[in-house]
Length: 449
Image (cartoon, rainbow, N blue to C red):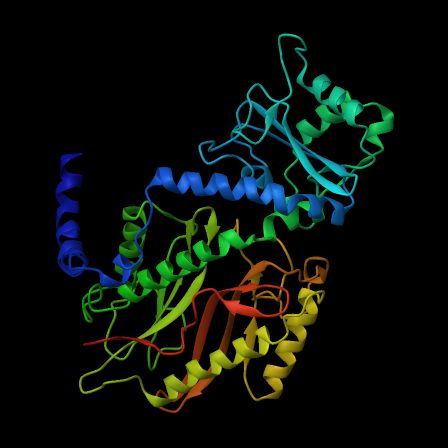
């Protein structure tokens, strides 16, 4: 093993010389986004969860026509939706965890909201009251059946979906256990909770939005620092070096990246618009795809930097124009966000109008929130620039968030070749308009030679 360590030593020293020595400087951009400690973050997560169950879940259950919602998972095999309902200090389900929501409806004109139960060995945080005592009823499934008989719901939602993966969390074994415990009457009342699960995942509450804006601002600050001379030494630093610097920074901030940071470049004379593992040189156009998770909210950002050549103070004019054309595609897309429109309607109209204006766009935007690639309306796919059945037919609802993801191809006179501007910025739709959570890139980051 010793010889392997000796061989690795020169690589370590090279890394330290190229990147780490630069990143020890004061990082004003990132430091302008101080974060609470992990305990304080957990408090926020639990407050959001309680508030969401109190304020949006009743209306979502009624919109979906579901009286009782069952979420069932075993440890290390969690339903994607159930995972978002666990308290901050529950990293996963325990043994078999069964969460039950009952719409209590109205009484004397007063909304009684939703009752939350845990048919599990343990209470689940302060929200889900324990509704099972194994000592008096050893059979967990039978106890669930007793609760269903007690409340007599007309519709019982289970997380089963052919098209939306995050709403398809009920595994075969747990479904068999459920069916085996229910009478024929209640087996016939089981329905897909697809629309309810999607609604829960996609809908944001007002209390979350300032923190979401903060998370996006922090992600942009990390990008701005990565795309600066603090990290990049032209002629030495590789795109891979920058990727690892970003990942190290995320870990340093006690955050997670929900996918590996991806840094690529375009270069005059090269036909590949996504060159990776290359040494960054003056004249290169850099691109990054980057997303972090903060308070269970995910960001997803794609931006660009230009590496100045000797004597340059700005990017070539045609590259600057290319970025502006990319912004124009964003404008065509966001102008089509109207409550009730399907993802396909938004996508096809924006694509047609952008092309009619002389642009060469590709649009592939998606919902974002609890998951980076979230549930909700699909608005184009990068490899399918046409209407998407079912997922694309899902309508746009208020109080939802999206990654405005797309690209535009533009012929650069300076480079005498096509340049692809790939952009992605997070935005929030309040029902009447869509706004970027923390602005969007309209100028390149500049790295000096």
